[in-house]
Length: 427
Image (cartoon, rainbow, N blue to C red):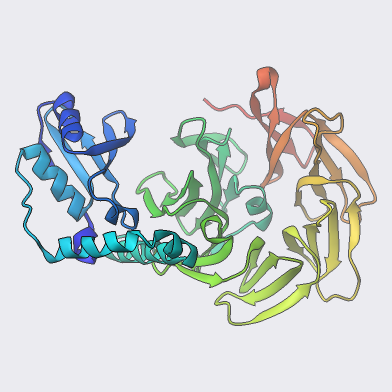
C-alpha cells in the first residue's frame, strides 16, 4: 500500500492545455478544481478502491510540459495516458486486491458506521506524513493565546511581530505597533485563514479543510493535515492538539510535522484549552483536566462550558445559557455571573473583559464591542456596530471585524491604552 500510493511527481511533454484536457476527458479523469496553470483531478475508473485511498492528482502545466504530483499509482496512470501508452489488463495481485475491496463495497454502510473508513484515512495520513521530507525544528516554546484561539485564532504574536487574518482571507505580517510590513498570502473571499499559532519561526494556520505551516517569512509552505475541518488548534512544543469535527469532535494530537496522528480522547468536545502541561477539555456537562498524553484525568468543573480561559486563579467561560461566568480554579467558591446577557465572544486583559453580545436579531441596538472589569461590576459599550466577530488580542490592541457600509466587513482596532477605535488599512 505504501509503495503503491506514496507521493510522487514527474513531468511529461504536452501539446498545450487543449491536449491535456482532451487526454483527461478521454481517459476517465474528472477535474475537481481549475486554477491558473493548475488542475486538480481524480480518476473515475478506480471505484470503489479510490473511496478509501487518496486519489487526487495535481497538474501544474505550461504550453509544453505538465508536472504531475500525487499518489504514485495514479501519477503513473496519468503519465501513460498522456504518452498514449495502453494500460495492461493482466490479472495481478493489485487487481485481486481491488476485487476484494469491491466485494467489501457491499458492506460499505456497515463499515462506515463502524468507523473503519476513518481509521483507514488516519493510517493513510500517517504513512504519507512519514514518507515526506518535512523537517520542522522548533528551538523555542510555542506561543499560545487561548483567548485568541477561542476567537477562531485570527491572530498571534511573538516578541518581534504580529500575524493576523485581515478580512479573514488575507494573511498579514506586521510589527508590534501594527505598522504593515508584508502580505504573506491572499486567497479567495470564501477561504478563511484561521487557527493561527506560532512555534519558533514556524507559523501554523488552517484554510478550508487543511492545516498548513510555513516559515514566518512566508516561505516553505507545507500541508500537514487535510482530512477535514478542525477547531481549537493548539500548537505546543509537545505537538499539535485540536478538536476533530470529522470524528465526532474527538480530541486529537499529532507531531509538529504532521506525523503520528492519533485520537487522544474519545469524547464529544465542546472546547479545549492548553496551559503548559495542562489540557482542559469541556464536554457534556463537565470540564476535565488532563495531562498532555491523556493519561491523567480529573473533573475540575461540573458545568457545561465554552471558550474556557484560565486566568490567575479563576476559570472564565460561557455557560449553557450563553452568559459569561467565572469560577475559582480550586473550587472554593461557586460560579459567578459576570455578564448577565447572552455573550457572543470575549477576551481578557489583566484588568478588563472585552466582549460582544449575542442576539437573534442581526441589527440589535446593543451590538458592538463592550467592556467590563473582572468582577463584572462596570459595563460600557466602547464601539457600536450592527455586527462584530472575533476579538483578537495582540500587543495593546483588540482587533475585530465589524459591519461597514454596503454590508461589508471592516478590520477595526480598539486601542487599549487610549480607548480609540479605528479602521486598519493595508496597501
